[in-house]
Amino acid sequence: MTDSRPGILCIEDNPMNWRLVQRLLSQAGYDMHWAEDGLKGCDMALELKPALILLDINLPGLSGFEVAMKLRQNPSLDGTLIVALTAKTMRSDRETALVTGCDGFIPKPIDPFLFVSQVEAYLGGQRDRLDQGREGAALRQFSQQMVERLEVQLKEAQEGNRKLLDVQDELEQRSHHLSRLLSLSKDVIPLRDEGEILARVLRQLHQELRLDRLRAYRVHGSGAYFQGTTMTPEGPEETSVLPGSHPLIAWLEGLPVGSVLSGSELRQSVAWQLGIELGLWTPRTQALMLSLRSRSEERSLWGFLAADRFDRAFEPFEMELAALYVGILQVSLENAGLITHLAETSQALSTSYKGLESTYEALKEAQKALKIQDQKAVLGGLFMNMASKFQAPLGTLKEESAALSLCLDRPDTTLPDLRKECRPSIHQIRNAVRQVDELVRALLRRAGQGEASSPEWIHLHDLLRQELELLRAEGVLPEFLPVALDLQAPRDLLFGVYSDFTDLFGHLIGHAMEGHPERISLRTRGGGSHFRMELEDDGVPIEARMAEGAFEPFPDLRPKITEAGRRPGRGLPACSQLMAAYGGTVEMVPVARGSLLRVGLPME
Image 1 (cartoon, helix red, strand yellow):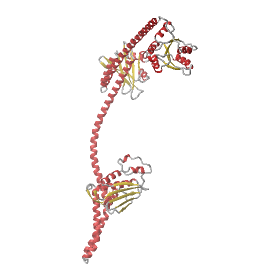
Image 2: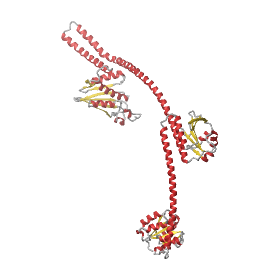
Image 3: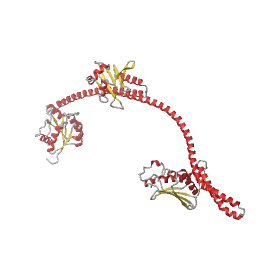
Image 4: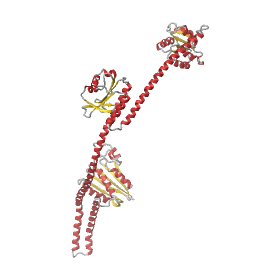
């Protein structure tokens, strides 16, 4: 033989037989393929088109005879040899194999010493032939085998169909039970009355399982005993309570979660005799016992259900159905108790809310009165502090008025000399009056009595001086904290709302005070078309990451500061909004120590 051997397909359902065939023929140099059933063998034969097919006759599904007939009906496999491998060695079996399309026959078990030569003989041209006149008998034998096989398959199909019908009936019953269970759950979940919930669930469970006796127990709120309910033809009735120390309770608490017992498993347990003594079932009935755990505390027993009937044992599906019913009963009762509790709590809260509402109104009135009182106290303190600020200009008015009176009373004074001597005093008096007037106006604005929200012409330098005096009087700026003024802007007259700029300056000072400075510098610069103000403090420095978002809204969302740093002032975002309304800017300039805020305003 040449090195290129033809392919051989072995259709064999026994892996051990296949491995023997593969070992023998692979060692002889053949390319081996394997299919474990007839249908797969037909598909592989059409795909591979092997030179030889070794076909087991006793295959599952399609028999070897049927596979041979199927393969011979395909013209593309006319050149493929089919050799039967079977333990059937009777003459009729050989003839049937040849009639159905096989070219030869090798009996099982195969002889390892002869097998390769037998295969090579068929590949070399050997063919087995029917004896003359035996075709009819072989065909009749094959037809009889096919009829017998069809009869067996028909019986199997009928049996399978019967089982399918039984399964279908069971599924329809389960579907019917589950539909009624679903409908019940929709009806009882909204209910609030525990007695009605018990009646509906237990009545339907009694009907679904055709029970003779049904009793349910659930733990009392105190945990000391279990309340019992018996289902009767007239409806549910209360039965005697069961102490928490009863042996049946102790036994139930030892069961695994979700246990459902019936039949011999229940009869052989301690609970069987205890149940007879309690009247849960009788010795001759089929009984069912189901325990439920608390959903909040899994280790504690919430309740249990006991039932029995005379006619038949409980099926697994019926036990599952009973567990579903009891689960719905537990959920519905717990929900009803919870909703009742919530309703009572809501009513109590409503009553409390009405009391709180009236108390709140009284507090609002008291707060309003207290606010007025506090405002009077604050304003009183402010007026007292401002009184000291009036002493200097008022002293000037008193002294200059006295000097002016003395000058006017002198008889030897001429009019030109009088004018010359009086002019400085009049100038001092005017300055003092202006100072008093500005302080009074600022004070009235702060007290809410002046026009602080209407646009007017404002001298920014005067506003800064007045606000510094008021902030010191209010205690925002300590008396000991020096504020260096360097007001050199050549133009400070601006048309705007007075309170806008007092708020701006207040926020800037508040930012400076956050750093606990030892000194504050206030400078103004500018030209004819712009005004620039800088407020610098020497307090705690501001981290670069904090300075980047200093003017962004929602300052509470800023990241936490380190121990060595400080936050930007909370009012800086408001400063940015105020300046935007006037076409101005406010920025934080990096400095080595403390912080520097720069405000720019257009003056045209």
